[in-house]
Each structure stands twice: as C-alpha cells, then as structure tokens.
Length: 193
Image 1 (cartoon, rainbow, N blue to C red):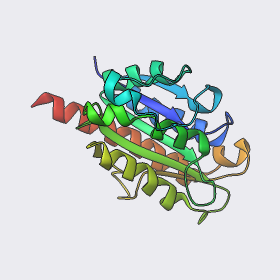
Image 2 (image 1 turned 135 degrees about the vertical axis):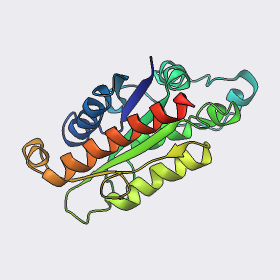
Image 3 (image 1 turned 180 degrees about the vertical axis):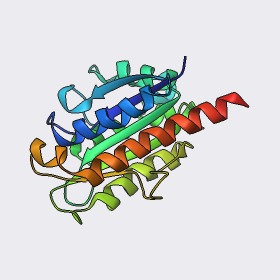
Image 4 (image 1 turned 135 degrees about the horizontal axis):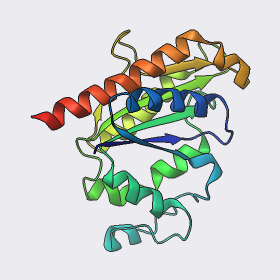
C-alpha cells in the first residue's frame, strides 16, 4: 500500500496542522495510507555542518530527526506545510530541511511526489514565497512537485491567525483538498505504469 507523509512545520497545533490534516484526509479517499508528523512538537536541532552524515549515511545529532528521516525514505509522497514567518518557512521546518543532506546524497526524495501548504496572517502574507521555499527544497532533492490541480496554484494556501479563522477559510480548505487529491492521483498514476 502507498503512503503519504504530512510534515507540519508549525510550533502550534492549529492552522497549518488543520490544513495538512485536510489534505491527508483527501489522500485517504484514494486508499492511500497517511501519517502526520508534527515537527513543531519534536526535538530537531539545527544542522551544525559537521559532515558526519556524509560519511555515516545518517545524522549523528541525537534528537528526533533520524526517526523521521527513515519514515520519509519509505514514503511515496510528502506534503510539507509551514506557517509564514517573515515571508518564509518556520525555524522548525528549516531546521528539519537543513538536516537532510544525507538524504540528498542517497537520492532518498528523488521522484517522490510532493506538495506544499502555507498559512499567513493575511491573504497576501507570504504564502507563495513560503511555498516557493518548500518547492526549492524539493527541487534540490529531485522530487516531483505538484500543486493544487483544480486552480493551478502553488498548493494549499490559507489566511488565519487562529483556528476558527482557518476553519472558515473556504479557499484554504479547497486548495488543501485539491493538493491532497492531486498528490494521490499522481502517486497512483506513476506507480501503475
């Protein structure tokens, strides 16, 4: 059975978490397993560029990162999400991204189906630049990036300061559902051939 992992880069279990759950719920409708990993609640230290991962094939920093990196290797796709922090991803997500050097050397994300979700405090609050940063990460890893198929946008985008706001943001819910459905469709199509 195929599996899609949702990586939530928010320190809070609110807006970004909700939209990632929304996208994964759409994935499940296609009989694909999902797992949501809340990076903001894990202990993931920043990369210190010691280069040990290049020699050993895994990071030597003792925290929660290595458990997640193993799950990513086995996944068929990834939905990565972040709140907008000054036009970019959260520190929690950036720390995770920076620790993946060994995954790049292993081509662990090459050809995985990926997509992005971002939530800003205003409608034009940096969602696209945040998603672009996530897309850049995926491109460098050789992943296949998909967006919201129906509207042809970058991915799921929301506007919210609190959970009640995101639950009333029909655009955010629609684009996140569309992203989840598109990722599921591409995973199934590519693995059929």
